[in-house]
Length: 440
Image 1 (cartoon, rainbow, N blue to C red):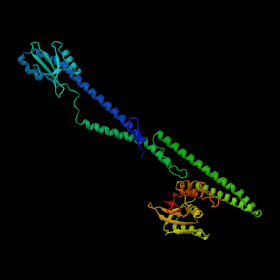
Image 2 (image 1 turned 30 degrees about the vertical axis):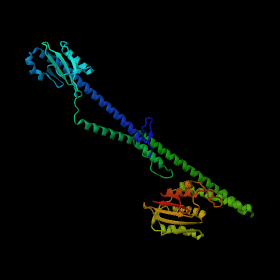
Image 3 (image 1 turned 60 degrees about the horizontal axis):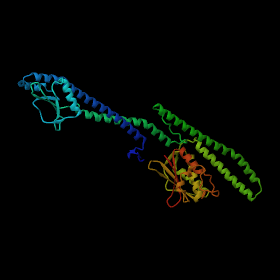
Image 4 (image 1 turned 180 degrees about the horizontal axis):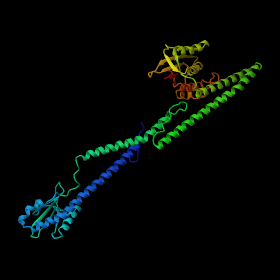
C-alpha cells in the first residue's frame, strides 16, 4: 500500500487519485452545504429579529398609550392582555440591573423611543442571569413607574426532525460523491488493467469502447495502439523468417562446396562454422513460426504415451532422459507445440547437465504441470526472466562449444502462449534447473 503524501501544513494527502477526488468533492460540497445552511440560519435570525422589533415598534406604542390613559387602579387588569411572547409590562420599577451598552440594547431602546414618540425618557438595563433579559424603565404622565421586561429571542426553535434530515442529506452527499468518483475512476482502472495485461502475442478481448465520449475515445486509442504493436511485432517476425529462409540457399551451396574441397583443418573449421550458421537460421525460422503460426488445432492426448514417446526418442540415441513417477490422465492441447516445448527443455538440460528428468503432476487448479529437471549449473536468479528473451546466452556455460543460439527458451515461451499455458524457470534445491509448463 502506497504511503500518503505529506502536505506543508503537516496533514497527509491521499496517495490514490480516487481518494483525492473523493476528498476534494466531499469537502467542497460539504462547505457549500454548510454555507447554505449558515445563510438560511442568518435569514431566520434576521427575520425573527425583524418580527420582534416590528412588534415592539407597533404594539408597544399602543400599549403604553393605553396604560398612560387608564387610572392606576385599572392598569393591572390589562397587563396580561398587552403582553406578548418576547416582552411583558410590569407596574413598578422592576428588578435591579446594570446599564446595558450593547448594540442590541441600544437597538431595542431606539425602537421603543420611536414607538412612544420620545414622550417618556427610557433607561435600558440588563438583568444578570443565565437568560438574556433586558428591562426598559420609563415614567408615565402621572409619575407611575412602568417597566417593559424584554426577553429577546433568537432564531425560531429548530424542529425535532431537522437533525435527522441533516444526517440523511450528508449520507446522500457522501454516497453521491462516492458514486461520481467511482464512475470517473473506473475507466482509468480498466485502462490500467488492460495495459498491464497487454500481450500482442495473445488474442485477448479488446478494451470496451462503451461509456462517455472521452472514455470511448481513450479506449479506441488504446485498442488502436494495441493493434499497431501487434502489427509491428508481426512485421518483425516476418522479416526474421524471410531473412532466415533466404539464408538457407547460400548456406547449402557453401556447405556443398566445402564438402567437395580437399580435407584440411581449414575445411573442418569451415564446415563447423557453416553448421552453426545453419542451426541459427533454423532456430530463427522456428522462432518466427512459433510467434506467427497458429494453424495447429487442439487434440486429446494420453499423457503417459506422449511423455514416454518423447523420452524413448532420446533414449534411442543414447541420451540420458528418464521419466520420474507415474504419469496418468489425458490433456487437451496442441501436441506438436507441446512436443517442441519439452524438446527444447530437454535439449537445454542435456547440453548443460548431460541428463534430464521428466515429471508430470496435477496442480491445485486442476491443471497439468510438466517439468524437465537437471542437475546442471542452473541460471542466476536475477537472470531467470531474461533467459526467456530471444538470443539470450550466458557466456559462462552457453558458449560456442556447447552450441545454442539463445532461441530455445524464447521459442518455448512463444509456443506456451499459443497453447494457453504458462512457463516457469526456477533453480532446484541442491543445484540444477527446472523448466515447467502448465497446461490449463
